[in-house]
Image (cartoon, rainbow, N blue to C red; front, side, top):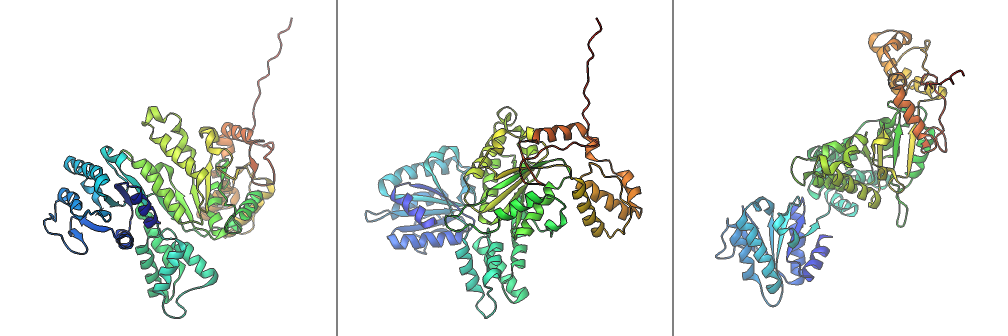
Length: 493
């Protein structure tokens, strides 16, 4: 709670306070309520309205002079109580040496006269000169209880407010929205449907995530019925996500999917959300890299904060080894940015308590730092091997029906992946030809990358769980992936 944290810091005489908030009006309302309870003097300055204390502009305060506004808080100081100056969006002024110096002097002086300076900003961007003089408070996004209160205040007519499972779905959809965004989404739903409906809320949430540029919301309709095989992996995830963790319950962490390219790792992650009724957030780890100092660290914190707020959800990071492979040499190549991003992600994966189920995929686990896949970061590490004959038959049935292909002979599909079977069916439909003809255009990855596939399967044997059957993965002999051994004959004596 913002008011509780702010009250504690003021009681402990932290005279420089940075409040990170995207909802300044709500934050100001909470601060004003706290000041009334404790009988503290409150003043607010912004470049548009100038300095206001008690709803009025005090005499002698320069309305457009930030330095004068900082110094004016001393006039509100009294022996009876504290005085608080709130500066919304003041990070825009912190490029000035005069303003930084005025803040430093005021924060130091506040120890004597009980005056406090609070900067209200959507991001934490403290100048180096002031870093040790500010504490940071996060104004959290509304909880499910607060979202339900907002919904109740908007849906005032009979049958407008859902209940039961529909209410749960509505609150799941609204999780991660600000109060302002939630009010708009609920109002839009009433206009469109005459009731509060999750679909309109999802539309607004998708726009909100697009604006952040850090996460995207996958809105496909895939389910486990669209995936052949992977029975052990499906059963594990359904069991882990079958119920919401109640008080004292154990929250699932996630899974790491290692496998041959084209075996359904990404497709499984996208289908898992629809199968379990959770939104799937797609995290592009590479897109978190920023060009400015500190921007990458801020991006990863913002992305993980959004994921926490949207719980329960699936957080999906595809081919994560490509973004994290350089963490070990980060101090030489990029001044440690990759290492700090990697460290922030690892810390969150180990410590987060929100109901966010992480699904990451990798085609080459040897490129990942070993600490990434240790216990308690993931619930399990699964290997997705080339599908067996029975699994290939199941995949053929799915895609023959999807592309409306009539019964006909199937091509030889030894060591084909699910992606290659889909490609064959799509090409047969696209070229209006038979599956046997279309198969001439498909070269399986087990042939084009035979060495790397063999190396990956050998590494996973006994180290990963099998996605197809319970227990550890044991390597089956491949028909097309062969390893040749050179034999040296002893010289004749």
